Length: 401
Image (cartoon, one colour):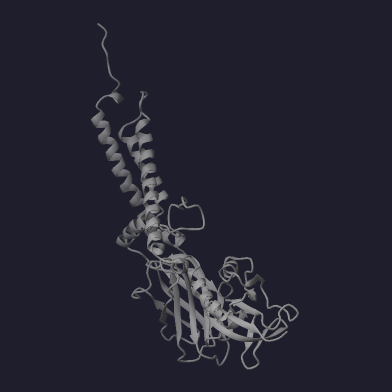
């Protein structure tokens, strides 16, 4: 009688299942240990370098001045007696970047200077803190105990109030990451996995897979987990030439894929909830204020109150005439005859008495003489009356030309 034998790889399915589960658990542990060892041995400096904003990368959003070889020079404050310097950054994590330093020349002794910043969760709210007195050239600050320094920072800047006795030169701002302990790295790992991404200008179904500048991107963590698990399973259960030997590895790949897909679906669910919070139950004005350009729309509501009821000619001047802000300003101010294609003041031959000029900040090349009621820029002098001024821009009515 012929004897039927079973391949060793086809017997004891419970044993193979146990080995597979051990490989999955061990792979997860090895992935976490590998990431911890990488960051604790100096890898943090490679993925989270200092954020440096020099004078060339800073913008003067309120005031008059220009970039120089030494830094961003501020000669005069803006219409609200504010000199505001602002720089955009790539969403740095507040719990990681806590050490701030700044370098400013020309600051009078005892003069108050404020740090301002905005977060990704609430970009329309400007948070601020008075900086401690430093040397004549700058100072340092530990933001660990600052309650508003949370989440992901998308912009930082400096504010100086009042007239300037002499020009200020902002040479730079720098944010440095702090050294993290093992416990802090583990908490950061969980945070990077559970932080969701808000809507962007891309497809509604698009997700980057991780927040910008995440220390532990979920895709990388999942790839390490699946890779280590596959290696461990191959060691626990060496392959034999038998049907089904590749199925455990395919299951590992599908498990990782499913975990990432579930996170993507959760991300979309969070976006839906955020949309309902922003827009549900609001009128048209409320929805516009809650939109991406809500801050600009709030400013334009004040501008519209200063414009006549009948459509008027309106020159919209900005440093990006074809950009988002200029286009949205023209749209929100319809049916006024707005022209948004200017990065300079209109010439006297273009603007006439009764026309309006809306300057969107920042536009450092334009100066306004209050006493003479004169707009000046690059040799152009345009007599105009200031009607409204805010951090987002200034509205003028042309008096002649």
